[in-house]
Length: 136
Image (cartoon, rainbow, N blue to C red; front, side, top):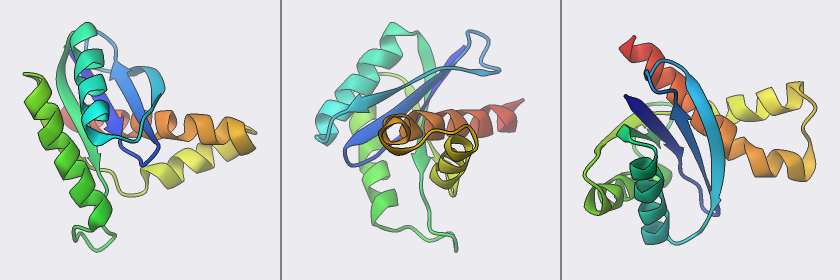
């Protein structure tokens, strides 16, 4: 059972998909799109093409657990994805994943444009790994 994780951003959205058994993170990539309905359609298309059974969308709560503007955008994306495909959609607490992705990329020497083009995919992988660890 494949699981897809989503790190939703203003200009780029990171996606990561698990292996067929749903135990480890596999492929990760970035969608370059600003329009939320187009992002939702792309997520649905990619999920259906990869036989994904669950879509996990990062839910960036504030550090104190409250819901801010970015989390509200992610909630709206979750609803939009539910409208375009018949796949379970879960919001997953993703506090600190983008910071963790930047740290990983710094540690591996990725700087500048290379980092900008991959940080969202790495963040999606971290969301996916967090979710997979919670269900194993």
